[in-house]
Length: 393
Image 1 (spheres, rainbow, N blue to C red):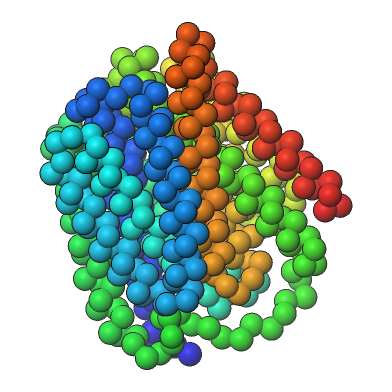
Image 2 (tube, rainbow, N blue to C red):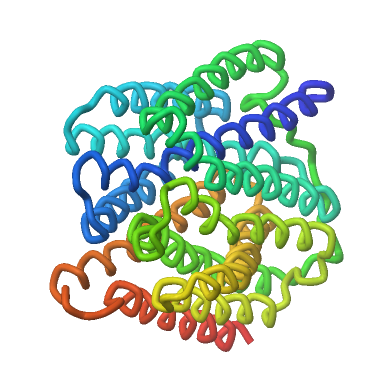
């Protein structure tokens, strides 16, 4: 068992998480502006690009979580940072859309080795008191740096050029790889995977296994549906910016509010835990997600865009928090469950943009076609959520 090393590992993981969230978000959010300005991508092409990335992420995350559980967390971190470094270097030097697309796919593969691993490391050894605290801290760290990346990314692009979305993440990944190698030496031999693994007695205050499994299934359904909405909105950011005549910098200012609201939601849910295993909170968040998503993409009014983001960020915050908490609370194979949690995100990242791209391809004259097509998917997910709950009852 790790004593001092365990604290070092968790502190390092929260640091890795924050830096990685900023790096990956900066690249991912503004890559669609880059593809528009450099290669003439419109909404349809950006949505298809996002769908491909989501498919790659789904497959890689599921396997990466299993790999981390089997071969060790430090091994997974080193592979993840190494692959991301290669991908960012290649993408920064590519002058063709195909090269950037291939590099981005490789970047997604590397990223998949990070998130399930970090989620598992910060959750290992948690009980009914420490696990919610660890998951809450994890959510606050990545949400704050994610929001910062979207808010400031436009300024970075306009100040240093589009190559900054490759170079700055590259520098951060190199630093984290070096820190991983140092940390591994510090705790080498303490455990097989670099994480504390005390024996946790059964907690009498946790719900029954049947209820726990039901909420886990509902959360694994709701989270990819939330990411269907997110990753339909993100590739269409350049189109939203054009609609309101916003530069990348002001688009970042105007369209990052939901990220800050998500952070505030994470903080609230971290401090107030009575939402655990309460169906009404999950179903209410799902309903707000649908309404706010449609408003953001269809109402041609900047004030509505701002207000709708308040509900969009709150709904996504509760859905994501539920998915991660129930994933970590439901079993001991944290790496595997982290991989499934991330793979579910990838499913949403793929299906939403794919539906939008197909609609724009075959129904190009339909006003807000991609938004309405994705809204149908969200409604189907809402019905499935209620079905799981009724079956469990």
